[in-house]
Length: 180
Ligand code: FES
Image (cartoon, rainbow, N blue to C red; front, top):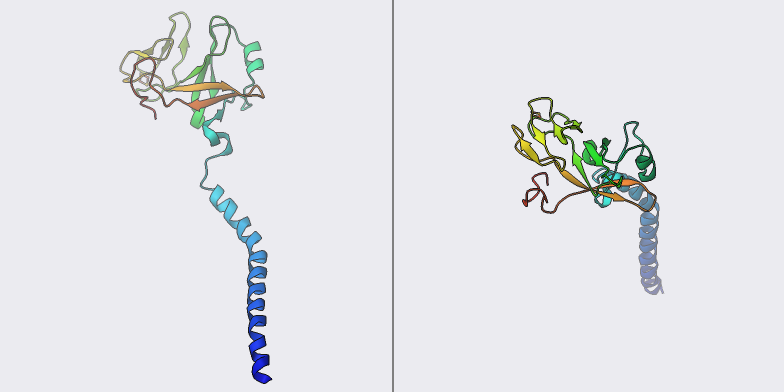
């Protein structure tokens, strides 16, 4: 009988171990999840750049809304927003006041000054050492070695203007993008 009862204990012990495991996992699991989710989130890029799109932000730090941007600018305007990696980036309105499909990083490829748009000259002209870029951002005078970096302009279903990395051929030079 004694042997039989010890033998009967074995399944009970296994059940208790199983229950302990379930309780342990059930109790610790949420705690571990609570620790590990922020731990892994630390290594992920900010939400704004997940999926490859960055919200354009205006000078006040507000998200750029396409309709408002069009209402506050004229045909042919080029104006700065905060773009990918926080870089100053030109949004372009064409002569029909449509938002251009590409934006230009305003950082001079020589030594990093912000390049102003000169409407009269129809160029971006760097005040630091005289580099010039045409209306598409292609370098036309040194010492800047490279054209201004491109990004795609996308308007989402909430009318927010977003910038996406330009990884294709640079249409101005026919070369791979140097900024990727
Ligand atoms: Fe623009 Fe030197 S930083 S020309």
